[in-house]
Image 1 (spheres, rainbow, N blue to C red):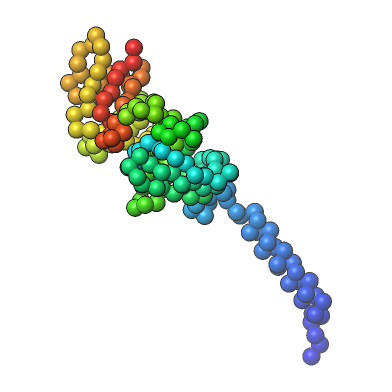
Image 2 (image 1 turned 90 degrees about the horizontal axis):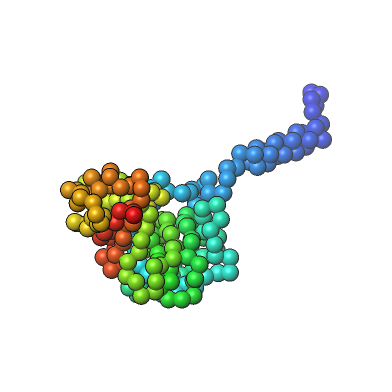
Length: 202
């Protein structure tokens, strides 16, 4: 029986199939993190808050496109050592990473692992509170506050509501409705790990 295709033809077809597969793989790859690593969480829930006493990091440690490049070990004021792994979603705005307690860590933890984190400037190395963005909403039956930057933070039972020269709001909900558009100083207690006071702007 006559051979329909020579071995050279079959080899050429094989090469074309391999090239087509490579092109498909290259063009179908999503952006970094599309395989599940480094994907930004839909909710940035803060379950751990602490002053950072020391940072041991790789030279490349930074945030690029919302995910961590490099890695770091953070020693916290309560003695815990937290690992920030490569590709962890996060935010870094703390400028002084050498002075103890110059940075505060806010993180969403799953066991000992960090799901998402923010490393921000403290309000002073000896200050045990941290002012965070305006409180704009409450969820979880009033146990959790939603900030203007979409962070979810624990609320104390009986958050102090302060607004000089204005009638005292009867509830935290009414305080938020009255003052969130003009700005609220939202005060986190770094010992209690929760919002303890809200202060209207002006």
